[in-house]
Length: 278
Image 1 (cartoon, rainbow, N blue to C red):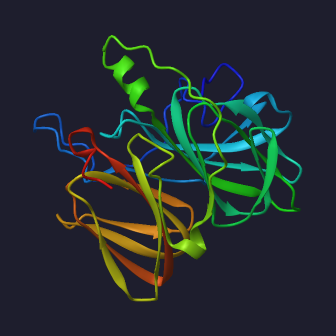
Image 2: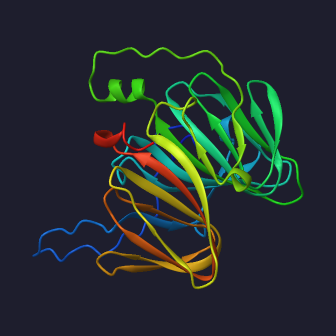
């Protein structure tokens, strides 16, 4: 998203810097820099209001939690977006990235290659390169969704300097899942880049789980509830609904629920372990 052009969440264009809080704080100038325990942490409370998303009339609230600067995987952006009743995130074609839309709240229609498909909380739509997608709010409340956009392997090769000209694939079939029903969704057969799977984990009050993988970063969104996450070094961050945190590959993080937690978890393979993170 360009700060001077019409805002385009999920477009993969230049983006304004996200408001992020990393742990621990930066080291004093006279000490060696410290590696962040968490790659990024953010909430939607300071989301921007943008207009004309993908050429559509109306406004969108938008927040970028993390991008290439924060992440080791070839991930373009981890974002949140929201449109009001009757709002539209305009239809646009993906040519160089793979992207998920995960509906958090509200109801609407996912527009895919000229056809509309009803979506509701838990609907997970996968868009591979070559396809056209958009989103329309059909309910009387805001429609919120989580967006993660990653580079297709051919795009990554070009950006790394390889002598490669990727072709844009033909349009494919619709891929929409009910994550809250299926609990885990593999992207195999649709995506070929770093985004390997999407999971939902529910924790009852007082319960905990350990999150972390040696071969992948994890992007975690708190769908509901509250609690806290503690890193291996003891760094602790409070969690509440609409908080997003990304864990680096090789880290171990203990999440404990307060009044209960629903976590949405995306696995993003880092380059040296891309074949392992499945």
